[in-house]
Length: 245
Image 1 (cartoon, rainbow, N blue to C red):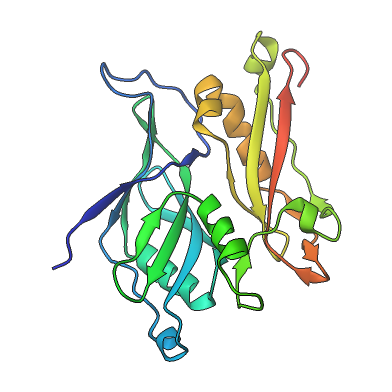
Image 2 (tube, rainbow, N blue to C red):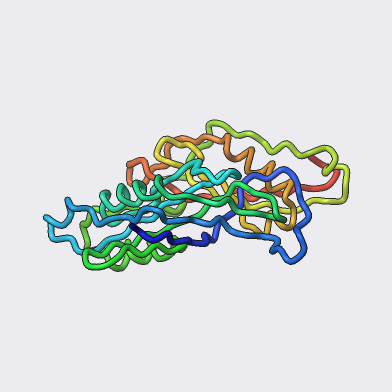
């Protein structure tokens, strides 16, 4: 029987509507817990081709009930590595992130490192995937990773923008601030995985929630790089000013 392994994901919090007081001795923020009940396996199809190692990165969204709400393959050295990573993730169990003791939707970035001899190592860093794609993959390899805005032919044109609904009570109060939402735009122009960091949630959970809710409804023309539709990582900064929705 496979042993149950638990992984604490460095997750970014998503929507949350209310604040709760933390219990005595309980941390303000507890990241999503991942129980790897099924290990990712090395793709057999690649063994025949002489491939001995590879990697894939997957962004996952976990809802406040601990269910896998969405996933997005953001990079791989070979497509089969991404497929195997997703197949394993779909069988895993999750415990939701908690903020002030209350469960919250959250996002985490997982990097899978495959070795033909040995185990598959899973880490929480998307940076390691970028390093692998650019530095350790031979030229011409069938690799893929999310683009940055600077790599696009042009900035994607928004076809649908929904403004955040600034709660009247907050607008009339002295509270305001900045919320930076990070999200992917996929090959069809859809927004995927909008999130903010835990520090933003801690500073102003209500404004973070309305910003993420708005961005999740946006849509763009497909982002293009050298004429091809690609996945791109983007950010949007919102400034909420008291008394001026």
